[in-house]
Length: 139
Image 1: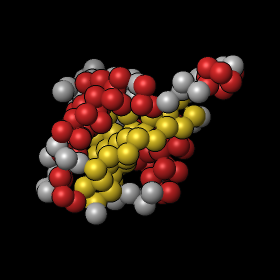
Image 2 (image 1 turned 90 degrees about the vertical axis):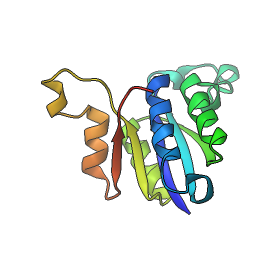
Image 3 (image 1 turned 45 degrees about the vertical axis):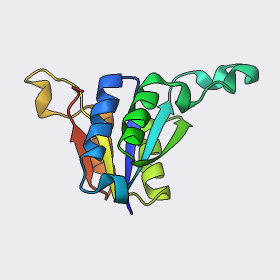
């Protein structure tokens, strides 16, 4: 089984583009397992406990749409969420699940900005020993 980690943010088009990359892998319906990861950042730890129960990746539209795309293509998928430092969480999840690759979503950049990846993308590339794929942002 070829296992990929697909960290998604709130952007639906980017998440679907990432999912599309995964479904286009050879024999994806038979041999690929996708792990969708959404990292909650900010002051969500300060939320009251009764509200914390609703903090779930499955409630995030980008995660739902990516999951739907993967499931429609018969790709095995699981959804995970975490809170904290996005880069660190991505790397830890990749190691914990022994993924074969990390599929990140790229952002549209100005010509000058294209020379440098975004901070999370660049940090993941520099701090992991696993292959990293950066997809385009358009679905």
